[in-house]
Length: 152
Image 1: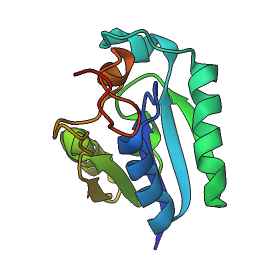
Image 2: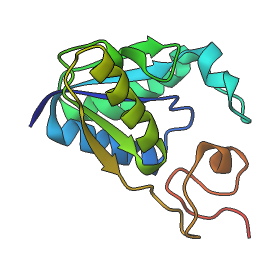
Image 3: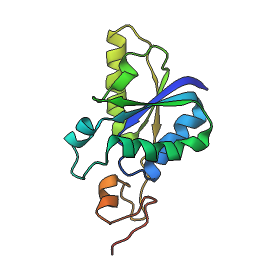
C-alpha cells in the first residue's frame, strides 16, 4: 500500500471513468491528494462549460466521502500541481490518456532530486458504444455518466 497518492483533474461531470481512477487511488493508498483544477486553468482547454471550482469540489467530496480514508483536495493552476514538489508522494494514479503527464512529472521530480513516483494506469472506461466516456459526451446528451447511450 502506498503512503500518499496523488491524482488530478477537472472533475467537471463526474462519471464512471473518474470513479474508476478514484476507486483505484483509495484502494491502494493510505491517503490521497486530489489536485482539482482552478476555474481559470480548467476552462483554458475545454469546449464544454466548466462548473465552478466550489461546485466541482462539492460533487467530488460526495463521491469520495464513502472511502473513509484521509484525503485532501487542493486547487491547482497547472498540469503538475504538487506532484513535482511534495517528497511524501510515492504514487500517481492516472488514466491511459494522462499517462504522458505522469511521465513528465517523474522527469521534473528527477531533476529536482525527488524520488520517482510509481505510476498506476487505470484503463479508459468505455461507454456502451465502445467509445470513451467523457464529460463532453455527457454534456451533449449523447451518454449518461455510466456510459449508457441517450441518443440513437
